[in-house]
Length: 111
Image 1 (cartoon, one colour):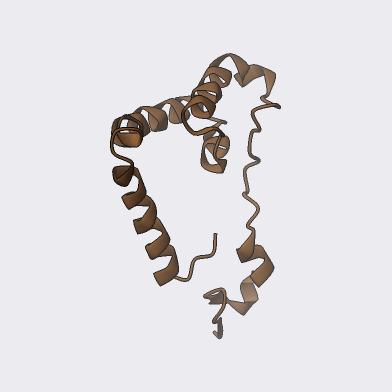
Image 2 (cartoon, rainbow, N blue to C red):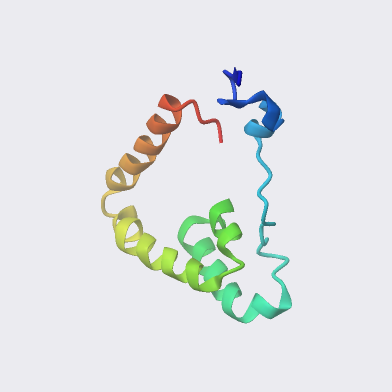
């Protein structure tokens, strides 16, 4: 089975370079301004917390939005690992970002 060197996948899978450059998630993202009614009570405060902390709601959090408990859990972990160091020690926050970027470069991940 021949492998496409740019995507790292078999040609029969039909995954193009364009799809790899800007992948569309299988689960729709929940935008902060378009939260479904049945999730609004739980999710809106969590999104507001994310905007207050980072100025935006990341794609990852918007994906997790379908399960507000996961968003809350992620924000608790993020608060313990990064938020408390954001102002006092910016290098602490930068280092994991550099690790993510370096890993993406080594694995040729462009997402």
